[in-house]
Image (spheres, helix red, strand yellow):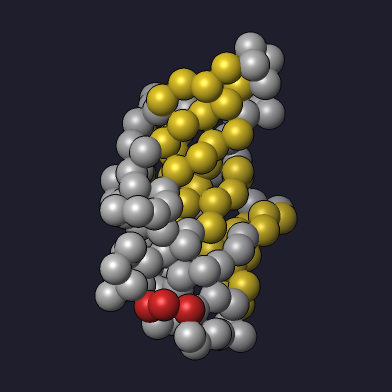
Length: 124
């Protein structure tokens, strides 16, 4: 996973596509699709995995609490413990094996903003 760029989720239609760019070969390849299509997610690389957090559906009717981890060694996704509070339009940062998810929108559409900081432990 070193140096790879993972691109997944988005609009329209709650995309599940998952593309990976390998800078060593300067090429893209398709990887296992995201289990739940959604947009307005956060993504982070942590302990050899690519983790996708939260999001909303493209119609802006639902906010997700899903946290999914992609393992490039097996080309598969694993559901992790959900967010304590569903959130969309978020960012993520990683330090010391913990995933920090600051703020975001607790309701669809981005009209409400949260000041909640959610901290997730990621399995090693």
